[in-house]
Length: 89
Image (spheres, one colour):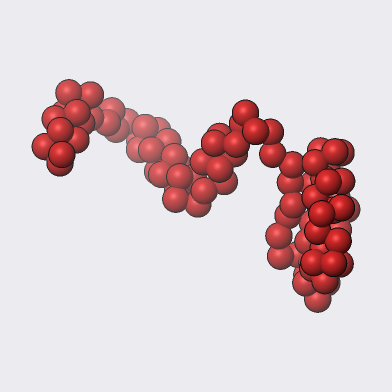
């Protein structure tokens, strides 16, 4: 994966973003030689999926649910959840 220093990114943001968008290849951003971020192209149609999949809270929630299912927890009935949501309104 190509890398770019944060100062160079700051000086050439538009061209770097254009390159990532055009090529579809991510670029690793470094600060003092250490990785701090990644610049990735995003498909507009898949944006919500990307945001949800990379959201720490969402990922924790999915992992917890999968763990509970693996342990035999069947969850809650839809009617129970809907009643709870309606009560909150």
